[in-house]
Amino acid sequence: MRVVRLRGTRIAAVLLVATAVAGVASCSGENPQVELSQAAPGSRATPTVTVTVPAWRTVTQTLTATTTMVTATTVPVTPTVTLTLPPRPVATSTTPFSEAAALTSYAALIRDITALDRTGGTGTGAALQFESLARHLTTIETTGAPPGLDPPSWFGRVISLRLFADAASAEALAGSPQAPARFAVIRSEVGVLLAMVNGALRTNLALPPPSPPTPAS
Image 1 (cartoon, helix red, strand yellow):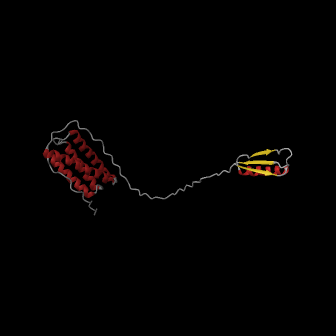
Image 2: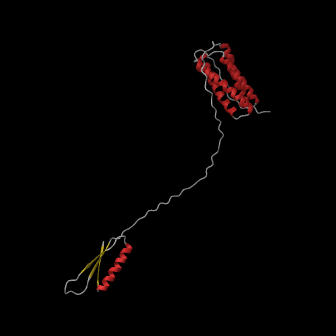
Image 3: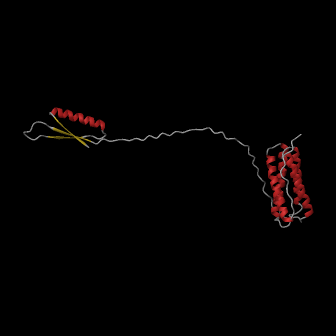
């Protein structure tokens, strides 16, 4: 707070007060305080004007600038094939197991998968081979479950594979892109089936490594 004292004639004092008040009012948000005092009797007419000016204020403003950058990104799109396995039926009864007939059917499965490898799982040849695979799986359903395996689980897996082979046959004949993807699932599941047989019968059945499809002539 600053105090300014002005001396002069009565008119000059009033003008000075008005000027000071106007100046202070323009620079400050608060009204200035003005004090007037009367001189003592017998003294010279030198009135004193006291003007109280509020302290100066410093206002600080902070400006924040935000910049948004947009970058174009190219995302390659890859076609996706979605396959849904049918639910595995639960067998209510089993047939007595015939090891000789079962081994013949298991060997037929290996031949079917090997032939499908050459077709790539698509086209008329693949459709016929899927039909052959479905027939051999049907035969396995009639030979009984290998000893030591849970019959409902075994037959559920075999029946599901047969249904899958039937669907793949129709897709391969129609040239659907689902057929090769479905064949990949069938090949994997047949490998699991043969591993279960090996554990039950002490055999060494296995699918050959996948071979590239034979180019069409």
